[in-house]
Image (cartoon, rainbow, N blue to C red; front, side):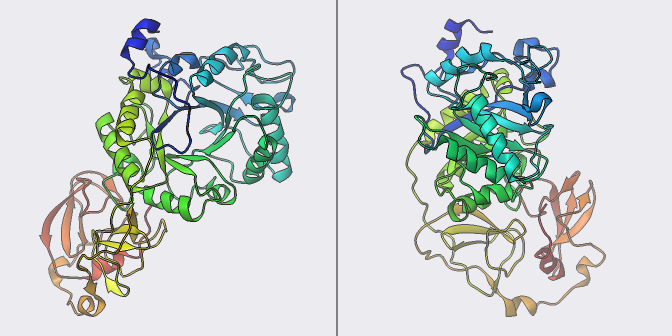
Length: 475
């Protein structure tokens, strides 16, 4: 562990405590509890997870979800919690007749973090969690249990003793959606009129809608959504592939569907190359992506990182992204002007075309004559909100002109690119009237995109391939 004096000297945030403000655009939420660095680097003990208070000694981190309550109904009917090398049911004492570890030694650490202006929440689930409900009644009963064990209730089996956490995070990656809306509703009811605010967050995967929490977040209000933009095709590694990157879809959900119109969407990112299978970006790249989203979408709330141990070992990755967000501004949002041409109904657009429509700027994923819409299987991707009426000249091609083009044998024998197919180096496809060769293994990366997966080798005049593309869903 760093000497405290050295730690303080390395920090840029020392002047005062900054209390968490949910409406800000520069929040950083970092998961703690699973010792992700230790799991990925079992012999590198110097980087193993430290007590939670270790990560609260400057203002880089604003919210800390404690991970995880990984079993809902364990021995004695109580949940079970595993905090890896810090506190777990195997190495630490459990409450009699239960599998719930007594982690009350962490109470003062948690209260220290809260005194520094952080919010500390309890995260339920995780990738390997034994979680789920049979019905709403069971979910409501479990909400009372969580309230009594971790939040404002009372119990003789409180894992963190007298420490009162600040809310609940749902990281539900299996088990379906049954009961979770009822669970959240009951937590909201129990916390109504409390002496402090309680926050409800969720951490869905980036494919929209999430298979477990998609219907839940439509039904009940959440304060923040920590979207996991990693380990999926819509992850940060494909940020430059407009058809894959779907932050705009999440923003439209926030403004048009969410029961809480003030919900904030976070860019969830791995804090190190060993923290996830795909999605890790250099701090420079992540800073660029995050600040671009901050300036493009009003629902943006900050960045979520997995996890604290990885971030600290990776040259204080958490501090790096915090600095970038602070520089971009904690408050205030200016709507960009609609600089793209207005969408023209009934017109044809080629891949890469940009239009303004319904308060957003959109980019065509491939050839399309469909209307831009908030659909994961649609032909358009929202790239920014915008305001005003564009005076730019439309660049679409009329349907009549497009259908008059004649087919050519120049692409004969070259299959049209498919978003659901896997290609290896040397494979050829036709797309938007051109022939491309795969540079290496690739799936769902558009040939004309910026992923670097394809090289254009020649052109052809057929329109067949371009028209087929509008029928393929993105995965």
